[in-house]
Length: 130
Length: 100
Image 1 (cartoon, each protein chain N blue to C red):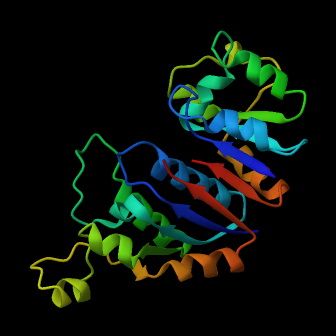
Image 2 (image 1 turned 90 degrees about the vertical axis):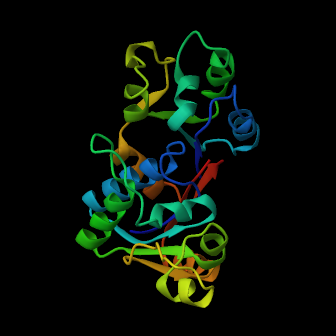
C-alpha cells in the first residue's frame, strides 16, 4: 500500500515529526511504500540543514535524510511556508539577496499541489501536526 | 475510518469532538498526549468507557511508555498497539482522519 505523509510541525516542538518518522519507518518495515513526506507550515523547519542538536539528542533533520536515502523517499517542503520562515534553497537565497541558504539538499521545494498529487497517487494520507 | 487524536483533553477539545462525531464502528487511536485518556482514574475515564460501546479504541504503546504510564492501568477494553499496529489500522480503514 502507498502512503503519503504530511508533517505540519517543526522538530523539537512537540512530537509530530517524531511520530511521523516512526510511522513511516513502521510502514516500510511492514512492506508498504511511503511515496512522499510533505512538510508544511512549521513542518518546513524539518528541512533546516543548519540544525545542530547536541550529541545526546536525536538529529531529526538527518533522520529524515537517512530514511529518504535508504528507502528512496521523496521529501518535499512547501515553497511559500518555507520562504516566509527563512528556510531557503540556494536559488531562493540568490533571488531574495540572502547570504545563506539552509534547505538540506535532500528536500525538494514544491507547491501544496505536490502534496495533493501525493494524496491522489497514494492509498492513504496521514497527517501529523500540532 | 481511523481517527487519530494527539492531544490531552485538558489541552484541546479534539478527543471530545472526535467521540461526538465519529461514525459508529470507527477505530480511534490515541497517540502522543492523548494517551493519558486511556488511563483509569482520569477525568475522561467515563467518556472513554461509554465510547467503547460504539468504537474500538486503541492507544499507542510507545507513547504510553515514554510518559511512564503503566499498561496495567489502561481502561479495560482499550487495546495497546505499537507503530506496526498503527500502520495496520491505517491499512484496514479506508481513510485516516487526524484530529489536530
